Amino acid sequence: MSDPVELLDPLAVSDPQPNPDCDVCGALFKQWQAAKEPKSPLHNPSRALDLAVEIRRHHGSVREARR
Ligand SMILES: [Zn+2]
Image 1 (cartoon, protein in one colour):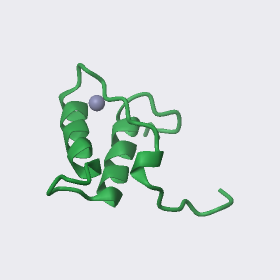
Image 2 (cartoon, helix red, strand yellow):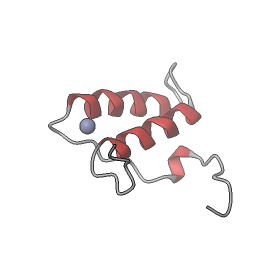
Image 3 (cartoon, protein in one colour):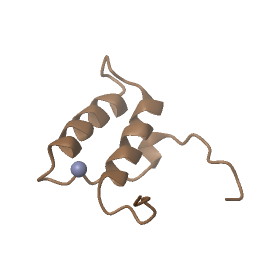
């Protein structure tokens, strides 16, 4: 960890890849789509970033702590 992570524009971050068989990912992905959509009443860029991270962490995270 050198530099602190800055808040990035969610549109500049690659789209998260939800697992199609996972309901949690699906729900997170819908929220992410709404949060990243500027015209959406739910538009919230920082929330979109959080959701994208959450989706990525939900499966196959390299650094996910296991107990
Ligand atoms: Zn999932």
